[in-house]
Image (cartoon, rainbow, N blue to C red):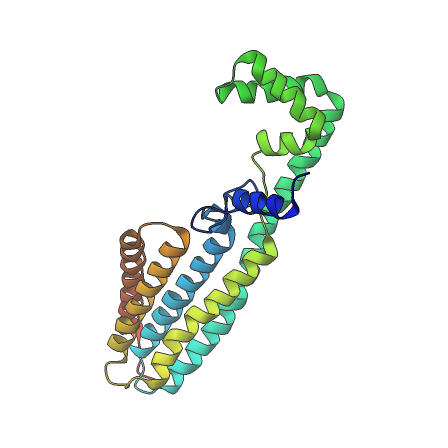
Amino acid sequence: MFPTWASHTVMHNFMTTDNNKPVITIDNYLDSHYIHRSNWLRAAVLGANDGIISISSLAIGVAAASSTREPIVLATVAGLVAGALSMAAGEYVSVSSQTDTEKADIEREIKELKQMPDIELNILAQIYEKRGLKKETAMQVAIEMTEKDALATHIREELGINDISQAKPIQAAIASGASFTVGGVLPLLVILFAPMKGLEYWLYGFTTIFLIVLGTTAAKTGGSSVKKAILRITIWGTIAMGLSALVGYIFGVKI
C-alpha cells in the first residue's frame, strides 16, 4: 500500500516548484496578469487624475484673481465635495447603463436559444471555426460546450461577456469617488500650507509631482509603460492648469 507520507510528498511536489513557488493552475493563472484589474483601475486612475487636475486648475484660476487665501480654500473645498459626488454618481450611472445593455443582450440570447437552438449551435461552431479550428472539430466543440452550459457559452463566446469584462457599477463608483477625493485633497494641502505669494506656481509644481506619482503608480499597477503614462498625464494636466490660470487672469477681479 502507498504510504501516507509518500502521497503527501507527491502532492507537495506537484503543487510547488523547486523554488517553493505555487504551480500555475487554471485557478491562479490570472494572478500574474493585469487584465483582471482593468475595471477598478480605470475608474481609480480617472478619479485620481480628475481630482488632482480639476481641483488644482480650479485653485489656480481662483488664485490668479484673489489676493487672500479664504476664497481659494472655499472654492477648492466646494469643488472637492461636488466633484467626488459627481464622479461617483456619474461612474455608477455610466457603468449601470452598460450593465443594463449586457442584461438585455443576455435575455435576448436566452430567447434565441429556446426559439432557434440549431441556428445558435451553427453560429457557435462558426465562431470556433473562425478562431482556427477545423469545421468538424468546431462543431464537436460547439456541441460539447452547448451540452455543458449553452447560455454561459454563448454569453462568453458570442457576446464577449465574462467575469473579467463584466461591468461592476458599485465597484466603479466607489473607486472613482474615493480616488477623486484622495487626488483632490493633495492640492488642498498645498493651498493650506504654501505661501500666498506665487501660490499658482506652488500649485503647478506640486501638482506635476502628484501627477508623476499617479502616472507611475497606475503604470506599475497595470503593467504598462511608466514613461508613456507620465508624459500623457503631465502634458494634459499642464494644459488644463495653464488654461485655468489664463482664464483667471483674463476675467479675474481681485477678491
